[in-house]
Image 1 (cartoon, rainbow, N blue to C red):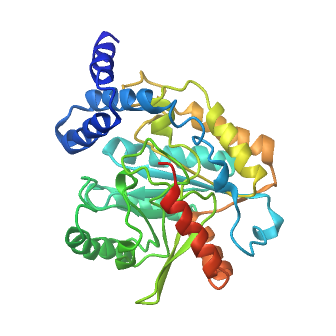
Image 2 (image 1 turned 90 degrees about the vertical axis):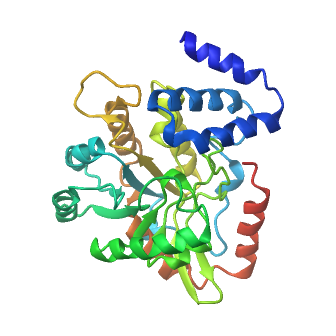
Length: 344
């Protein structure tokens, strides 16, 4: 705590926003060589310095509730859509996947697991078990080294390898590590959907939210290619429980209730890597799995039969079929305005 206070005091002496932004940029450049415990302390300080600044737009950005043009609702007249997803980034995360899958099955849920191809070593038995249980497997970057979008040349070279794994794993969805994104470049990937954006999250390294709690289609006018974009709309577990040190799921519940009220898509990202399922002593980057299970219980108890429990690929297939011809120029203009004016 004393070390945290010293770091916080040092950084807050730089009151100029430009200097604070420079410190943040330096942090992300040096991140690969910074010890994990220090990364977490520094990110906590960055959030503590900025959370009051964003209290009017996070976790709820009211303008994001606007439905697309000609929107008629979810299948079977469900009030909202629910998508559970997990990013698996370490060996520890891989080892917890099947236990987490079984816990979700006990609640009657399915979910999607996104793996890093070049870091995932023993994925085949895990993938097979997930698929046999009607869960989904997706691609989570390639190396998870923060360099995927460093230049278009790097992205295009890596896209070849990513597409190899998309084919090998029979995947249709992609999510970029650290939520880095360039929606125009994504057309180089052979995907049905991308899930590398968010409605609002000013605490991400690339904080430009898309400002909507609905999926949308990203077209390439030149190649006549398109994919569905699925932004996450509930705060990530790492942000809430590791960086903000929340001790309950109140923020998740508040945001879910708002999404349900507005008929949107509730998409959450959690990480088995940080979810302590075993009940052992928590490390600096872990939280009790009970938080996630409490969230599943809350969904079941409060909204039973009111939500469409869907995998990302099912939402994307629905959206591509239903909305492809209805996303007219007026709605594209609306999304473009949000992207340009979003206060991230």
